[in-house]
Length: 379
Ligand SMILES: CC(C)(COP(=O)(O)OP(=O)(O)OC[C@H]1O[C@@H](n2cnc3c(N)ncnc32)[C@H](O)[C@@H]1OP(=O)(O)O)[C@@H](O)C(=O)NCCC(=O)NCCS
Image (cartoon, rainbow, N blue to C red):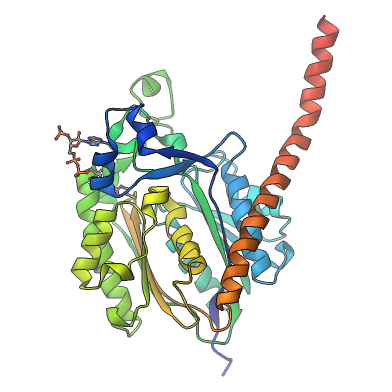
């Protein structure tokens, strides 16, 4: 019998744009207050893309440390899966831009499942490895969700932020990686979280822009009720499917949308709140980047040890939800490694960002030169 195959999380990285938008900043933009946002959501600030950030550049900055930490080069990757709802362009898929920028020579695809996208992508990558088809897969969650936010709508613009995070899964015969998963969808809730115009049903036009239909619209209370049920229900089912009890889980990593949803989930699962990782106060809801960003920060903070079982859950537009139980691999998360990797990842992310910027500048240089010359000629 061939040895069992598992997909261990062998490397990870994150990229958070420099620009910070605090609740105090938002008070100056819409009719809101730090008190309202903090009490109803737990969010204090969020990061927004700067001019130099694109969806692909952020993804690359998060991916380079993940690939290096896994002891690989981009050429070793067999597949790249990118979960996002805010690609650089409607076409081409941003996954191919990311593959090219990394210098990888493998297949790549973009996966859309709203804020649940990265958990869907992790599960998909795990299946490719378990089936024996591939050995090394990069799984990215990246979002510039601010492009679809209406900064005159206080019910949505206070909630979201931009970020990227990535992991590399590699094949191993040591038990680790995804132990159980649940993927869910209920399209009857499509209208609860939607960008009405800009798709093929209603291409963007002047009327759509006037009605602000190119921005996210959300029925907050419907999503809130759905989310609390989804978090507790899918976590309970996926933990039991892994043959475990909630008490066996070292850390729950929920989608970071609202601290109250996380608190309700903990209560329904009858688990202490301190077993739920929370960073929503720093980043708000970063959609498909939210769960991997929380996982990377939990590792950097020493909240996960080798062999620990961690349960992650996400929910979002669709409506969709997804939950996984993951066992952290033996050996790769020593305290020294964690410290090293956090510092090294920050350094590599910065280096990658500069490399991407240099590339963009080099690509634009002929255009600038041509414009400069044609202006001179006109004079
Ligand atoms: C959006 C959300 C924070 C709103 O909280 P809530 O307690 O449900 O608040 P309500 O929608 O009932 O609104 C209560 C009041 O606050 C007001 N309000 C909404 N946003 C506000 C803001 N940013 N600042 C101040 N007041 C605000 C509303 O207009 C409403 O006023 P009214 O009573 O005069 O009509 C909450 O519903 C939520 O988190 N839902 C889930 C959203 C989510 O997770 N989305 C992403 C999924 S991936």
